[in-house]
Image 1 (cartoon, rainbow over the protein chains, first blue to last red):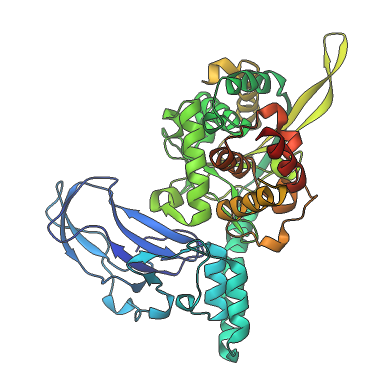
Image 2 (cartoon, one colour; image 1 turned 90 degrees about the vertical axis):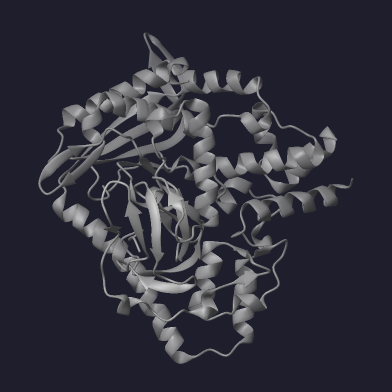
Length: 377
Length: 80
């Protein structure tokens, strides 16, 4: 069972998508596990044959438990990880919700609430196939509350908060951050998008955030020192760009799943992949690689009206890019004062790995790209 | 189709696209995106779903006319 986040201690193996003897290829999804953040698809990392499935479906497993043995093409027998099977926790049947072999749709926040309140989801009638938070809360009022359950709720909540606290404290105490910011005239990019979208049906429209992320990725190609990790006192640059996109789960925290191999995505693909990533994050259907492979984080609080974001780097990453709201602002062009759509772009960088010069080059590249949006297609 | 029927379709669409929103949180005259924390992606999905349902396409230039439930219903009823 891979760790899918700093706060994850265990997860339920919901379903095997392969059987013993099946040939699997690198990147193939072989199982679905359920975590507090929703259902996550687990992929294999090398080609081979499934030798043995060690864990039954609907079993809760601690992080590190061996789930399967894969006979790798490159070695004789590669065990994914060897750990005592004692760690396998008794199946928690009350957490498993299935109707006619089809899993119920429920938002992660509603599922979390149900778990906290001890609500049996099978007793709730879904509306249009989806269970809503209000139903879970309503159901909880009809059942008697057990004091010990309440104790557990408090602890779990603190546990999750503490995991975030630990990661952020580690970041702030260990990573010497530097912060840079620049004002970017977004009028050319927005005009360009408006023209492009005029020709398109509503389904194919490109949102400003897509062109921004495309701009960030292309700028990172030119300043690769910001994309990667600081591990074992060493600066490791990643060739692949997997930006973690900060996605707020309304009322239920924050996740930063990776937009994988963003360097290979043009503007249309960036838009489509982002849209797909956001809906899968909200409905709880991410892949393990999307939870773990981030090489940098992009946070965009513009929808909430925030003008500049100075992020805290998520270790072991090297930087956080912050994108603020696009606002009408006075703007000087030559001798003329005019009004333009202006956005604050910021970067928080790890000073152990890079100096302000690199961060400045990155912001300058981003600005240049956004002045020539046709280059971002 | 009456305005109330259109409002109900809009509410149903919002709840489908953002299942963690509760129906009673949707106010007639509040900005949909700000009050419900609907980001630009989900807002586009709502407009796409409404287009499929009613056949009315909202051009980008008209986004300010569909900012609240009330305004959105007015906009669609004129477009029908």
